[in-house]
Image (cartoon, rainbow, N blue to C red; front, side, top):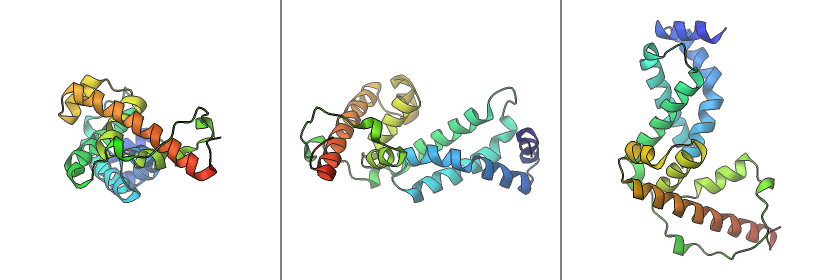
Length: 182
């Protein structure tokens, strides 16, 4: 069934169409959620909450715009809300607590999606959230600050710390895996 028909059915609150929409965008939504979540279970919860918001607000969707972009914004905002609500449950790790050695050679081009997710999931929640928003989604620090209800300078600081910690985690993983960085 074509997307416009599914959307019209969802606007009429037809369960069949809601199910079709969920199935059509599940993988896409999950790929976004996984980058913002501490675990697969958290990602599923964020995704399901996102779909509830999508169903409840689909009448506001402007059919002249991209549906995929519209749901992406809802998913990201839901992930931010979820993270903000649960941030105090996760332990912050000091960058100084991570052991590492600096190696010159890089193998980033050999990383696959799962490797990158594993590294991102080792970041403290705020670091990961801000890294994703800035580096992957392209949000400006002023936009992140507004969404997260933090000062803009904090957004910059968290991003810098996330980058440093990712580099240390990356080096540590590949130094431990191979005995040296390839």
